[in-house]
Image 1 (cartoon, rainbow, N blue to C red):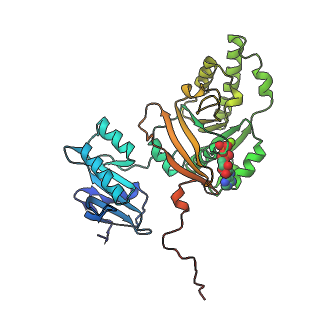
Image 2 (cartoon, rainbow, N blue to C red):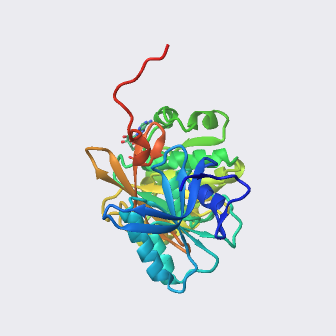
Image 3 (cartoon, rainbow, N blue to C red):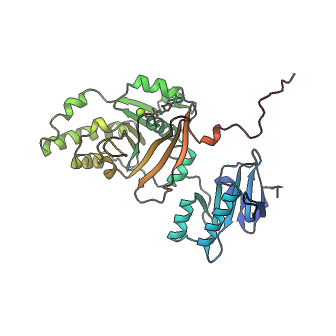
Length: 366
Ligand SMILES: Nc1ncnc2c1ncn2[C@@H]1O[C@H](COP(=O)(O)OP(=O)(O)O)[C@@H](O)[C@H]1O
Ligand SMILES: [Mg+2]
């Protein structure tokens, strides 16, 4: 089954193997086999159209289904079941046609990545630079809209904002974070301790850190008393924000959290979010949760274009869970993924596990 793959001859029954490997970031370090038989935990022998295995870690296997049959729905279900029996969690469906809704839903539900061979492989726009999150979003987040990252204290909202800006900076985009309840110096001191490179981008000015001044409180007074007050406040605040963005040529903005800028009123929040959106700009706002499990006032989620919900899954291990609960006008994966926060930022829990078979003893070399 393990055949070394010369990079120029890589089509197995017309599946582009390199494309599969690329999709799962196996670099060029992989082997593959077609019509591979694997014995599952149940004892049954299963056959896969293609299995691509990482050379670095042979536990990393991608099972591939070639979606050519008439009854793709039952093929996908069977494929998911046999991959499960074989302990293979990385799954791909290679297609040359459009999937119907049922097929598409199944691939989402089973976490099967579809690879459309009619399309050129293109680097997906990485919004956060966090593999699972970007994959779940599947390109559904758009510039010019406002998205919300929700969750309790400590789930990772601020870290998500920082990685969002760092990812932009890596691609040459200028970004800013507006802090509404933390001192800039505190935020910077913490963000620096991550290893994803915040400090360099901050120093060179690619990421700006902005504090909201205490004046917001007096500015907000009486904001619900009249329509005029409301409009004055909203246009002043959102006007200042867009001025900063335009002056500094910023294309990514995070507001962390949005709560101190708004009041508990549907029309207000609606108008505020509408005015906040800036063309060509990726924008995320965060919200702690209180009146609903998505926001402070329980209304914010209705007016943003999408919500990423963060939760603590297991307080004893620090395991957290992220799910996309709303994303207008895009195909995304609604099934949650699990993560931890380490000095590397948001990481998948697997990446922390010790490599299988590693010994507790270590030989000392001369
Ligand atoms: N520099 C860091 N290095 C490692 N872990 C960190 C660092 N900063 C924060 N964390 C961890 O990430 C968690 C989430 O932090 P944060 O993103 O500030 O959450 P939130 O903004 O949702 O309150 C913290 O509780 C802590 O466990
Ligand atoms: Mg925070």
